[in-house]
Length: 333
Image (tube, rainbow, N blue to C red):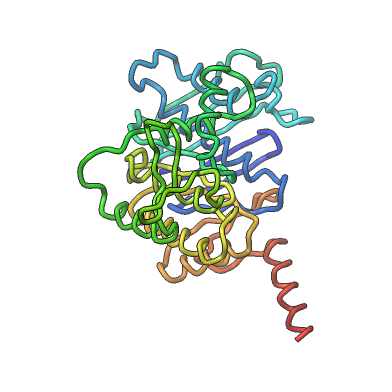
């Protein structure tokens, strides 16, 4: 898994060093503080490593990295990703199983990234990015927009996810923890999400009834995405999953159950990076860390100060505001 990361002059992020990462890692902060930006920077690096020398892909790693950055961040030129006003080049370093992937480039970079160093062995496993917005109802639109029209709009996190969801289910017995997690996910859903090949549409099945995906709740569709990726074996025990705002469109009970499932999958080997501004998510992960004696590193956006929930709750404006509201409620009572 990813053991440590370092970023400098990467977009909104001036400098970040995050070490001793775990199977569940949490980024917290208000909107616009760089949470999603951080997750996307890590995702593009991992997908670059995974696509390199896979199948018949003849691109070198420099070309793959350029394509992933260009289509994920969708800037006019790659050099625009360098932090404005910075005197340093953009750089990213990932330690993966103690092997290093590193790259850097300056503001004038437009077509080619020359400084790339990869010592990580070829990976057969997949990383995936789950955005705050569900994609099932947009599945065919995303594929057409990117594969046929080749236009900006849906970035590579959406395209990669749409393609992953198109992977056909495999026969045979699934990983035990995955099977149990899928059962728990389907209990939350109250049914199953299925893709009908004939109509090229996703549908929600509850008992003998079928419902159009467009009439299905956002939260159900979001949980169904994780269920589908476990079912079609796109995710394996060595996968890395990046989830932006796991709390989006879910009620508190569903969030709690979803995080319990994530903890189970993390114990099986999947590494998770979550970005959230929800006190409920922070509190639930804190309880999981205490109950399971599990290290859950947490970092606050803007200051990029890191702690571990196993050692207790951290000081953060989101937590402070939640406590303030609780005290205000007590005063009113």
